[in-house]
Length: 403
Ligand code: ATP
Ligand code: MG
View 1: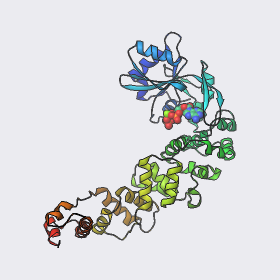
View 2 (view 1 turned 45 degrees about the vertical axis):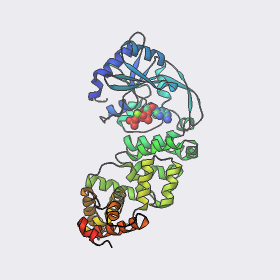
View 3 (view 1 turned 90 degrees about the vertical axis):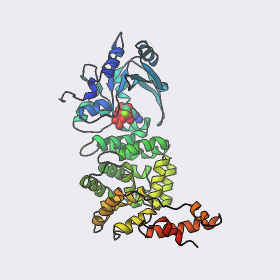
View 4 (view 1 turned 120 degrees about the horizontal axis):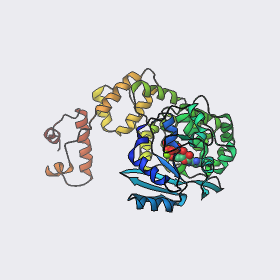
């Protein structure tokens, strides 16, 4: 049996109040999905989702009557966000699927908790928590949570054909909560049906991939994705490059106490080449911030482990700092003869404050130079000289050389 759930959020007054209101007068409401799973594993939760037999209109009316704010965030699929005492909860009406096409589902509201559980993807995601703190487990998900078994609800192939995103979700949840190996039937179904991933929108794929990459250690999940061909289906760029760098990165993260960084894991398995990186960015419609981080990483000059602090700083001045950091992390993770020196460079990088070049175009115009392209050329030359002085040459000394 599971230990009693002892996470603070369960006793949050706003949550208890919400459940009390929804459970009055024929209403039924339970905490659903990820929060229950994570509570059973004593892991932190991201958000508390509520399932209820009340239709959205009734949820809204009840909340308004009690003076709480509601936002129809996902009203078309039955979700209302309720804000109580500053805490936001997504309240979703029980549903059953009436039609699926591999990407979208047509849903009907229902009052059947087993039907609601059955339309979810994985057994570990089909758990509920009653207001009194007891677990409602219609499909035997609790046992799978505790044994860290990740498997589909009912027949894997059928469930994947309803929504191909579930292929990626299978690996994502294995990365976070799975032990040993993913369920064999699920693996087989993913292998057979991976072609369906091409029907999904880029945004949905990236949403899952980025969460998978942010798992404490996604390397086994990614290995299984490679074995099944799922990785090539979503990231063909990894095919020739390979994923051998991942275990080293995991080890370095551990040893060096680096923060989990999903994008660094991605960089470890794709070639650092501009055209490849831009192909990924376009295909997956990556957010601009992600796109430019990848591009900068692919463009940055090669590292030179032999540089000591001053020459390193002088080189760094001309580089994109984040990109150098990314390259350093990945190179250190190779754990080869250069790693120690690169680790020192990473320390310098972390302490680095990019000094500000003291001259402006106006300084040259004041000396009588005519405005025009010659100014920026001269400025760049002076900036070079200033960097080579290890950022020490004072303004007047630099200007003294202007003829
Ligand atoms: P996290 O803590 O990462 O948010 P989560 O379990 O809350 O994990 P979500 O992606 O937020 O995961 O989905 C919430 C719940 O909705 C899941 O637990 C699952 O029951 C259900 N669900 C989400 N996406 C699907 C899907 N594509 N097919 C079936 N069920 C799904
Ligand atoms: Mg969630």
